[in-house]
Amino acid sequence: MAWLNACFYSDVLRIDCNVSVVYPQNTTRTPPTLRDVIKPPYQVLYLLHGLMRNETSWQRLSSIEQYVMDMGLAVIMPTTQRGWFVNQAHGYRWEDFIVEELPEVMSKMFHISRAREDTFIAGLSMGGYGAFKAALSYPERYSCAASLSGCIDLGFLVGTDVITADEMYMSFGTPDPRGSEFDIYEIARRQLKEKGKDALPALYATCGTEDPLHKTNMKFRDEMKDVLNLTYHEEQGDHVWSFWDRNIQKVLDWLPIKQRDKGYVQKFIPSKN
Image (cartoon, rainbow, N blue to C red; front, side, top):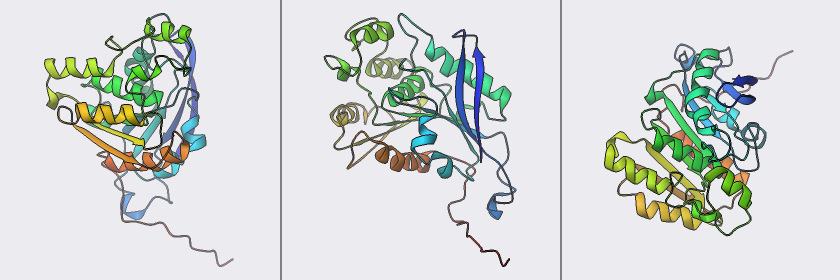
């Protein structure tokens, strides 16, 4: 694998933006069964961070690079700061950046597929919300989306100190975004009515049973499991990196990745010298 950090100018945001990338590399360390298989254009996973992190967090705090080794999967990790991956009511057009501009720029820099069936999006906490919102709002772009401990129900933010009132106004234009254009439930219901279940991406949601967001994730499961193509998983865990590190592996197992080797185990052979 290659690990790259890039900085490029965004025409949408009119600022320089940073992105971290884990990119497939076919080398002598690649399992023999995959040396003739791992070839571009590569499938791609856009992996989003949480509220208090940035584009480096998945690489610093999880083993994502190790997990995707020899999968033929590019992992692109952008940042929107605390912008919720949305076109803010009084701020930046983060959603346009993530959904439209970023894939265009990345496809010019790297040999990745732009096909829907090869494009996935996932994230944790705020990024889980962002992943589901992007995938449900633009189902023609993503085949799969995963939320890890996602803040799927923005009602969770109301009356808490998770974000300030000024941040709520800046991002959502209201102190209570439930029922608005930013509401995942409203987006899902509208898309189901207009396009139908089969046109929407496959969704995967997971949350720890000790997580403050567990109840809202169970609510989403109970209300949407019969109308969306939703896989739900929960296990013991809190809103912490040990949970996300375990469960990003489950997300990767769930994704329809074409180039991967499940049976080969690379062995260390000591040198005779």
